[in-house]
Image: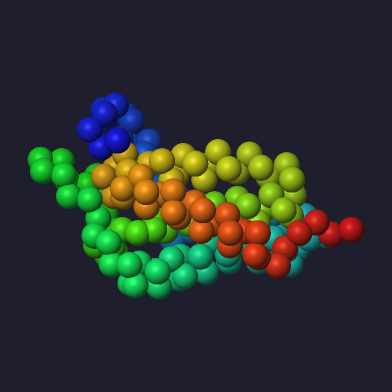
Length: 155
C-alpha cells in the first residue's frame, strides 16, 4: 500500500484521517457530542467517548509484549509519525473499531461510523506506518472491545 496510488492529494487525505484517529480524539469528540444530543443515553455515550483512549492503553500493552517493529521500506520513509517504533496491533484500528462497534450498539444508525473506522485504519499501511496484518489485528481487537463495553440500547 505504501508503493501504490500515491500523490500529494491522496497522501494529504490519509494524513488528515490519521490525525483524526490519533489518541482516539475523533472518537472522544463523537462520543461527547452523542452524550449531549442523546440525553437518554448520556452515560453510554460517555463510555463510548472514553473507550477509544482506553483501547489505546490496552493496545500499547499488547505492543510491548509482541514487540513487532514498524515496516521499513528502503527508499520509502513512513509518511507519518508515531510515539513508538512498535507496530502490532494498530492503535488507530483498535480504537476506531472499538468505538464504532460500541457506538453502533448505543445507536444502530451510528453504523455509518464503521466507514470512518475503515478509512482511518486503511490509511495506516498506506502511510507506511503499519503492516496490513497490524490493522486487521487491531480491527478485530477493537470489535471485541466494542462488544465487551458495557453499553447498549436503553429500553
